[in-house]
Image 1 (cartoon, helix red, strand yellow):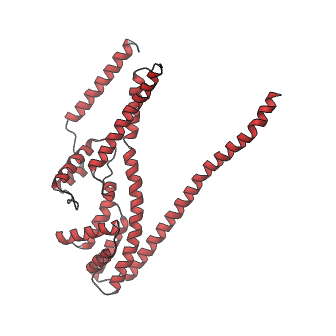
Image 2: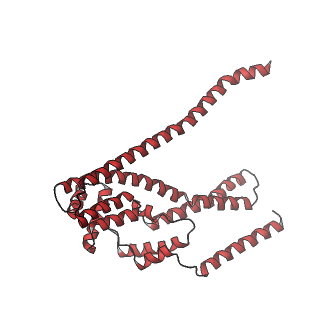
Image 3: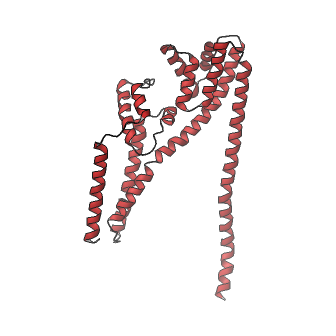
Length: 292
């Protein structure tokens, strides 16, 4: 590399460092969502100590400045801490930053000269790409968890309807239906109902808050139905059964669509394999023609 190129690279690096330093020192306007959460912090999760809650708040402040969106609802659904999420992102970014150096080191041992700026540029690109790998993984796992939660909610609606059929109160029906299940979805509903009792709020409000927090609209629908039963004394047995049936239909439709999409994805490898086989069969004949 020439002297001019080295000077340009050093100047660009120094300018980037100065820009990052100014960005950290100059106070940015606070975001509305994190500011409201600081005024009304979420309750401590079961099994979470106060020290872990403070550490979680520090990482959330780091999330305000980190590039890319922060999947709070997905992490809450998966019960994954903010610290674990960002440790994974930093580890992936460092791996992407160091990977080109390993490859260039191997080339250097073979006697191949590589300009200095190439591994640096490739490392920055790889670090930026791998920074978002945990986001994609969390989003994929959260979609699967929401589908599983929807299946559990369909059964939960049926259980609530059966308890309402027995002429029990709306709050009692929710508690007894949630106590039947042993899966993680039922445990989340049980935690929300137990928190509602300790905070002296209605159980349907707790179910609605859980649906809003985890982005599960079906829980909000359940809360609306149970609120009508409590406030107006409406007979909601048929409504609960109809909502459970429609939810099962939606889930079956989504599964059929996913199965069709997966079947279409399998056609491309099959076509590629057929092309390779045809090429392998035709290659000797073509080569014999050119050899004449």
